[in-house]
Length: 227
Image 1 (cartoon, rainbow, N blue to C red):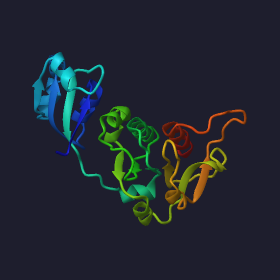
Image 2 (cartoon, rainbow, N blue to C red; image 1 turned 90 degrees about the horizontal axis):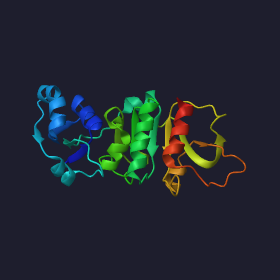
Image 3 (spheres, rainbow, N blue to C red; image 1 turned 60 degrees about the vertical axis):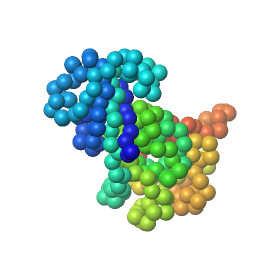
Image 4 (cartoon, rainbow, N blue to C red; image 1 turned 45 degrees about the vertical axis):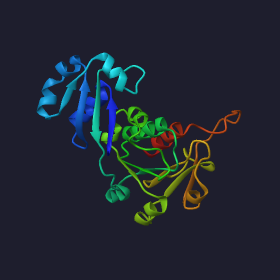
């Protein structure tokens, strides 16, 4: 039906206050309705008062938090202007919803306005993604397009790929472009890797035994260097 849900006081209230998504209906406890009655009325949002037991039945959280909202999905459109003006992220087959949400939150923290997902990356509207993003989806443009289609729109931009063997990110001369973050288990796919123009790596300690970093952790370190 083109709808998704968000839960929790903070996240739902952020969605109420923004204008990016249309809120279709809210199901909330009396306490939430009483404390947010002004904004619910001002925004003309349809709401239903329910009991704690009813909220537990419809919630996906282990500990439901007062309110659940049903929201309409919005069209995902690539912002070409952002590509040429700022750094963007391209997520190549990120499968874990929590990782996707965390990466969107990281992008928001470092002022990256656009996150582009491969068609095989997990869905933006997965409840776990939305929870992990902590409202960052309201401030970051998240779109899904194939990598070749993206490259056709930004032919002159550098494309950075995070790989195990590449130039030390701390000594590299970095400028805005596309940063590719690869799959949690397999890294950047062979097809995408062929199109990378700058191979960068986060150097590990010589004595360590870890093979790689979590995708979201690696993304945070890389974004901090482009900040």
